[in-house]
Amino acid sequence: MYNSLQEVFRIKVGERIKTRRKELKISADDIANKLGVSRSTIFRYEKGDIEKMPTETLNEIARILHTTPQSLMGWYDSSEDIATIYNRLNPDRQSKVYNYA
Image 1 (cartoon, helix red, strand yellow):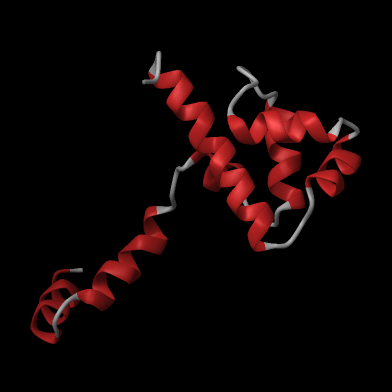
Image 2: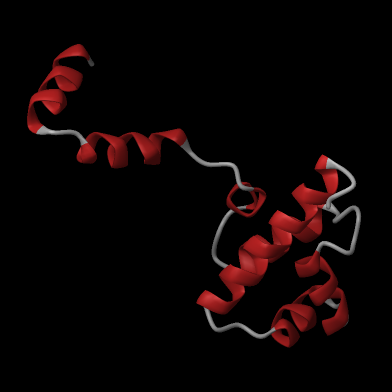
């Protein structure tokens, strides 16, 4: 079991980094070289072993992975989700939402 919410948060960020890295077929070595750290440091970020990742590091990892720090943190842009939700509505409800907006 997790000891704290902070631990869960670290692990989730690490999982998102790993997932995105694998989606793009980027090796941990590639990221490590660009950051000037060891490969094991990248693996430790991905496993959530490092307690506090510097903001600059998160920003740079996001840049390398062609995403945003917010995405890696699990935050989302609600404007993106509105279209997705709207498209799942049946036409009658879409019309009501459109007229309301």
